[in-house]
Length: 83
Image 1 (cartoon, rainbow, N blue to C red):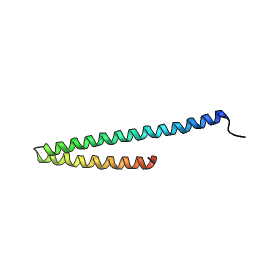
Image 2 (cartoon, rainbow, N blue to C red):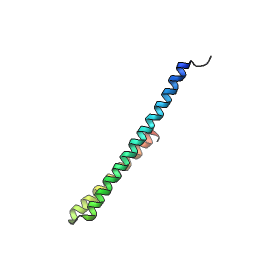
Image 3 (cartoon, one colour):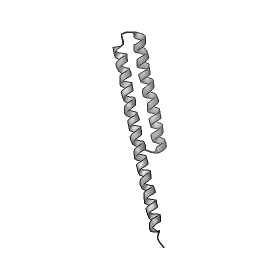
């Protein structure tokens, strides 16, 4: 005997829900990546335009640190979620 119609409907709804959840998570990660890129670009701009060498050095290092930390976070999340 085959699956009951209600059981099939519930299974289909669960599959659709999982796909929608993955899409939302992927969109959130993409947004986080874009925001991080914007912050890194801003830090690099400050580093290029700073007149005091300590400020330029600090802004440049902060840009590198932000970029590397975000890359690790994004890579780990995409690996864990198999995106």
